[in-house]
Length: 189
Image 1: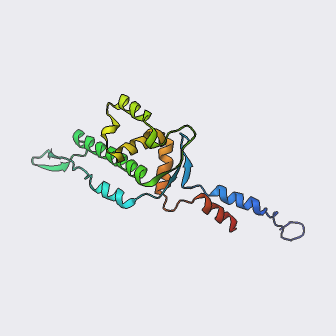
Image 2: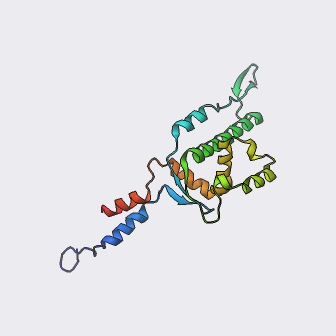
């Protein structure tokens, strides 16, 4: 309302194109992105049942018991959560869980849509295996086909922390919005 005449004045109405643009910009989660190596990938939601089964196969270690003497005689036992061996086992389990979830995500959720010009596809790329063997001292040809493909994805496609974070974020989103869905949503307004 204007203070002078008591009438309600509305701001100008945004153009339909501006509304559609704002909607498209507000949709942050897309299931397609380009990695740091220029590979266009599509990421599907995480296979939560597989993750749950994997984690269940990695039991949490029990802390050792420690005898606590009382000042007036006698003692009692407590779990020793500060035991170095226990802390090492917990740390190792956390690392196994992290690597396992990353592997599940890469194998079950990532689909390559397009490689950049000049980049060989998995079947034609042998250079990475020479580099891998030089660094790790293991020949990828000794790995199973699935393990070799997984290592190629890590070596050539999802190579940076940002790539990994993007894949993980999309995979954990139950219903990522693709480009076509975003366009349809924008048209509906």
